[in-house]
Length: 184
Image (cartoon, rainbow, N blue to C red):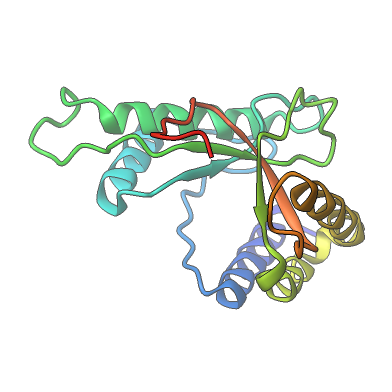
């Protein structure tokens, strides 16, 4: 299979998964193995952040010895957030506030120095999520793995909350501290 064909299949899978989830996808086309991110790509991502004003940013773990492109993607996502907040960058534009940055759970948590800090109940949307990741045919070996992880995180979420009916959950690590008015 050629690189162009792999790229085309991955694009089709991403679009189909986004359709299942009711989302939209934008492609920066920076490659994969290796990820080639330029200053122009960073500037474009900054413009996207400023345009959509995300409530949060979700990205890869900051370490991953198996996937060198994942930490780079995380660093770029974080750098774009910081640049998008800077009043001196394109000063005529609207700046970004301070959306939290969450790192989603890698499948080698210990190797990635990743620690769960936020547990999100995904029970109401589990069937839709499972259907979306089953579209990613190249990663079929992860379907059951992430189902088991979601069940385990669901147990943890139920035990760490008043909400005892959590069956499936996802875990995230935060990059920046949470700011709150109370400690509930």
